[in-house]
Length: 133
Image (tube, rainbow, N blue to C red; front, side):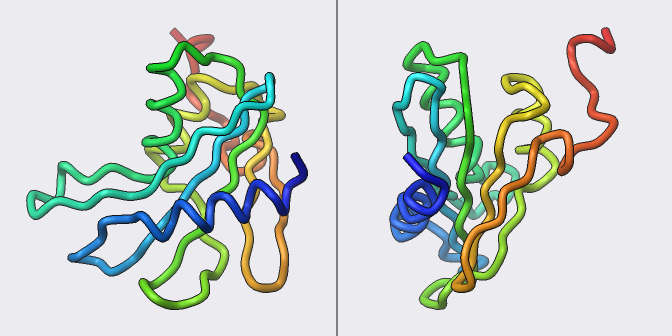
C-alpha cells in the first residue's frame, strides 16, 4: 500500500469521527508490517478528559488484536465538513507511537496538496522510551 492510499483510508475514517464539541474531525490509518490496516477516528466526550484521539484508537485496536509490528500511520484532520489541512499528532499520540514503533516508523501527513512523510524520530526528537528506564 502506498502513502497516498493509506492517507485516503485515514480520510475515510475521519468521516466516522464523533466531534460534537470541537467540530474538529480526525481519522487515522495504521499499517502493520504484515500489511494489515487498522482505522481510528477521534471520539469526544462532554467530560473532555475522556476524549480519544484517532491515532490511539487505531493503535489500541491493533494491539488488542495482537499486533505489535507497525510500519506507518496516515493522519487526516480538520474542521468538520471542510477539506483537511496538515494535521500532526498530539504529544500523547507521539508518545504512544514511541512505545510501540521504531524511530524510522513513518508518519504520513496530508492535505489537498498531497502527502508528506516524516519519521517518528523527526516528529519526536529526544523521545522518552523504555531505554530510559
